Image (tube, rainbow, N blue to C red; front, top):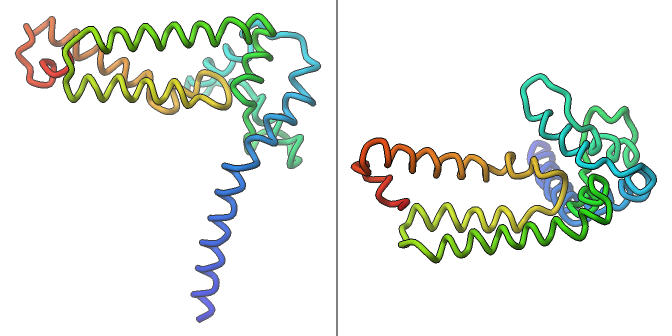
Length: 182
């Protein structure tokens, strides 16, 4: 019976922690990070995003902005834990008002381009999957740097699509899966 109470407590704790992380922790981290760190720093002109992309390489330290925000909220040295800024705070920190004005325009034109490419060619299950996944992943970037797209697999989808198109040209489109992406 005692083991059952522990299991119930662990499940309840997991539920409460997950709910708190989704509903308040990221938002609080974004606000605190913007007010305490990003607003008072000079514009990085993409430097923080460059550090984040460099940090994708194995064994290379990248951006520690999320760790700094986490340590402001919960203490510590900024090495463990993360509290990423919102995508808009990250854009402002990296490119200032210039980025706030231009990056949404760039994203909207890119989505429009993808949509017209999607409509202009015959539909297939595999092609639909790639395009729909791309639309969803681009539209759900809410926190952190654009390295989010690597973490959720968007660039992997694009690389898979390009690789299969290349194989289709190389082998004369005789492969079954390649016929489905054209």
